Length: 330
Image (tube, rainbow, N blue to C red; front, top):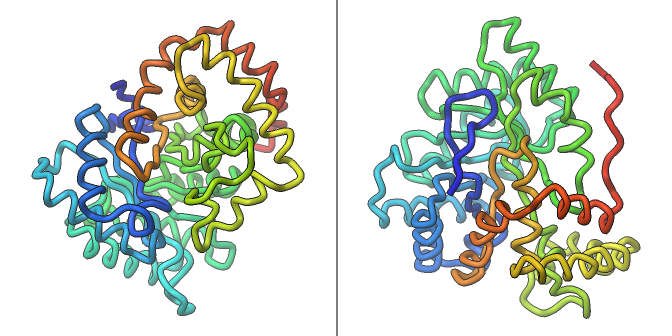
């Protein structure tokens, strides 16, 4: 396993990590979670991602129970939570000081931990002043309930605003962002955030490296039963497989098969390895509903070392979606 610095911090995070989104509480029970987390840990994974909204908190309960069963030392692993959707009440969601503090306490109770290593603002809250959110996150860290804070799917301008507020008020700025990033969704990570990597030392913990399974190639003949898009609440994924862009997406995936064949790897491993080739990616979060699926995806670490500049350029020609450079909005 390779370990990378998370942004401009001293924290070392495994290049591949394991997350609970969709699976824990929906497809994965405690025994399966323990088996997969141990498999990931044995492969060198040290970061396990979660959120208050995943399975309405059940994902955190399962992960917390699994961590207690493993017997790992707390210094051996990193855990995250994300705050935004904590319930249906008007103060049970968003990034107000009230919800950040109460949501953090609730997440820690479900995880059975004294602190999380990373805490994310799960989306931007346009109804709450950025300064209120920055101060609340700083308070969470000062209280020892989290070590680092960041954002998820925030516009670059709002991340920069949060950083400016923190520096001005001598508070702790956001360190990392958790965006969707894969071969078919590149603009935000490669273009919009480009000025932030050097300017504020932004790290990234990317999600959905397989585009919800599309980049595995299993959707070329339609939507198979039992996949994520068939789960309750995930119907929005159908657009990727059956929407207007589906034929072009599937054609691109099929165009990658010869390269995967030459490298002796699966399409999934190639897609994950491609994400790892981006130097601004701190870690790629893997999701899996079966241990054998996780083992296969962990094999992407070895494939990443074989992605030469020539192979990466061949992939670019197949994808045909390299983002244009960002105009200077600073």
